[in-house]
Image 1 (cartoon, rainbow, N blue to C red):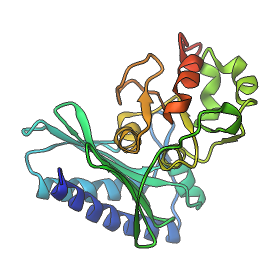
Image 2 (cartoon, one colour; image 1 turned 135 degrees about the vertical axis):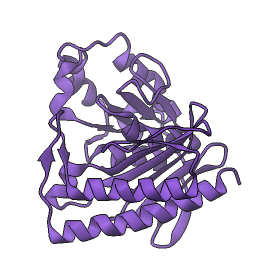
Image 3 (cartoon, one colour; image 1 turned 120 degrees about the horizontal axis):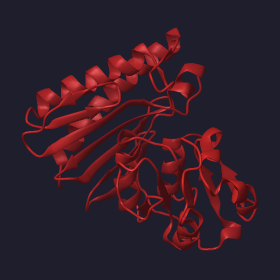
Image 4 (tube, rainbow, N blue to C red; image 1 turned 45 degrees about the horizontal axis):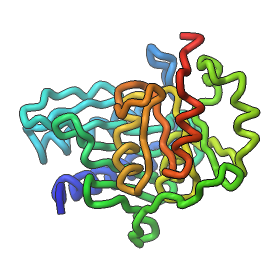
Length: 264
């Protein structure tokens, strides 16, 4: 299997970092505000340090890009992209929706991605050309995107609703969503994994960083789904994305087509 050792190391580090984060969660943590007003805790910093040191030991020529400052120049042309705790607001509030995201970019393409949910005891991963999988309760199952095509039967997930008014499509969003069977907003990584697993049909993410999107991209596509940016591109660096089942691609592209930012 391609990237077999990389996946083994990634899964091991995720389990170790997950245990560390859960210990902090049980003890209780407070958050500091970063320059962009997003929260950060000691758990974010310690888990990223754990990932960073473990990856450097296993793959010393690989680069690193981490949300909390991990930075390592790549000699190999490969970069590990680290989000130690995705959903720090959930983590601080003590709910179970937060995750840990890790991805490997090789020559500009994300080839491996992992989303670990320690408090749910679930792990999702995808390897380019090898499929996408979920591990839960010791059982491994293949992820497959939803076969649905009808909006009236569709479940759509929308992230960061508190900031959605910055986009030109916001005034028509509520009426547009009314056509769907259900709307969910549980948190970026979990909602996106619902799409990859076929539990939902589309996910709209309008404000994100590369470490939020890298793992999502490869897991979604290896599950048979579609990933694209609001401008129609296919980047993890654009700051937004849509993931969906193929049957919902036209609908989702129509929503974000020609959209623009109306607020900074």
